[in-house]
Image 1: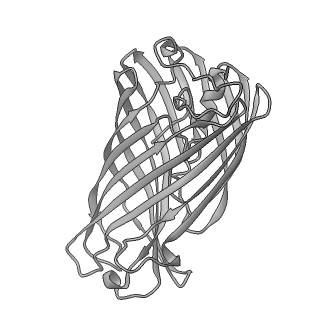
Image 2: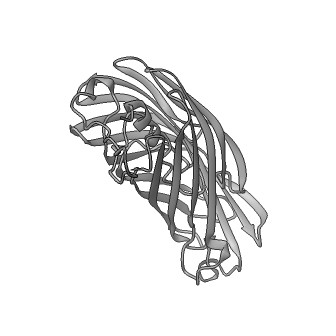
Length: 325
């Protein structure tokens, strides 16, 4: 039988995001979220006000190939609604980022596992015919070591466009629960959750993320050919998680958004960057999956047992570790 800790590795490996800081740890079989950023003054080169709304959907389907191997197909979609008010700058409108990923979790020993992720998709306003400028590819690889039932730590590298340019970024996977009501988990620096369980149905904490991607903008929107727009942001703020049912949860959070950087590229070459003012924004995320708290392990579905004689096809709960956004 696969140990519950190995099922946790499936969660730790479910990277369901796009080519930026979406390389994240997911704690759910499926999730949907919404964030709203208030309008602020646009850079001087493009007068007016700019506000953002962000919608995200993610889902993963862990499949046992053997007692030592789990394959996790995943899908994700992100929509950024760039709302421009006043001024005479270009109207960017809607930016889309649909992606698919495939994660392989290989258990080496009871304590050591290696995890690899290949992801691909598009990042574009889709106003023109799809081209190579819309494509994105993401690669992640790391090793994970289970020190004890309360601490797992991993290290590796992600090859993403989180900063606007396709580049390797170091990453640390962490799941630490020293006591029953406190834990730290995430995939640093993309996502970190520090959480305290107030009651069985309420968890409070601090959430930090680094978001970013690079989108192809059509000539129809800007009058420029082969234009790409990169956007990245750092967010930190409080959150609360309501446990609505055994496998249904709602995150509600507020955060400060800092270092909100835009950079433009023409024919792959940077033509300049600008920053939006910091703001406080609000968001909510509804997700399906086990809570991951040790106190809930008795009431949540156990990991299925793959058959001894043939490759299994059953679905494992994506549980125990992670820090989905």
